Length: 83
Image (cartoon, rainbow, N blue to C red):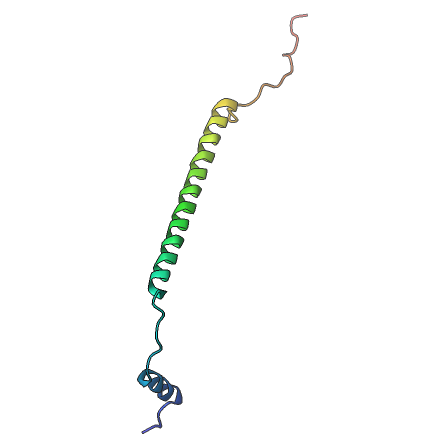
């Protein structure tokens, strides 16, 4: 049989020792912080989606006004024929 692992012995000693006292408002403070983080993340996600939709709408308006898929006219008059 092998000797016990010193880390296991140390962990068992810590688990058998009296536990430290937890501050009274620790759980409430942690819950409030979690709520703030969740609200901030939700607001950032909504802002991101709003900006994405606004950018897509601006692109559609720009594309419908400028019609970049249409080839521009050459700006040169047609050759003179029949002179």
